Length: 94
Image (tube, rainbow, N blue to C red):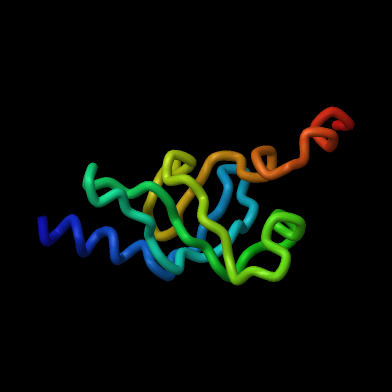
């Protein structure tokens, strides 16, 4: 279990990119569900404000669901966050 805890803390400071190569932010903290002993989200700072300008205006960061994570290595890859963060009317125009 100690190795698992070390692995979780190693996420802090890693850069997060979408699977399309778009910079999303940097992991500052991890959101946990202690009852289920699972990671539920990643708290990101140093955000790409082109993605989050409407959602994160005036805040230091955002929390993205951990289910969006595709892989973890030197960086964290997440699902296409760009499409997930768009307003519904923007998607219709595309």
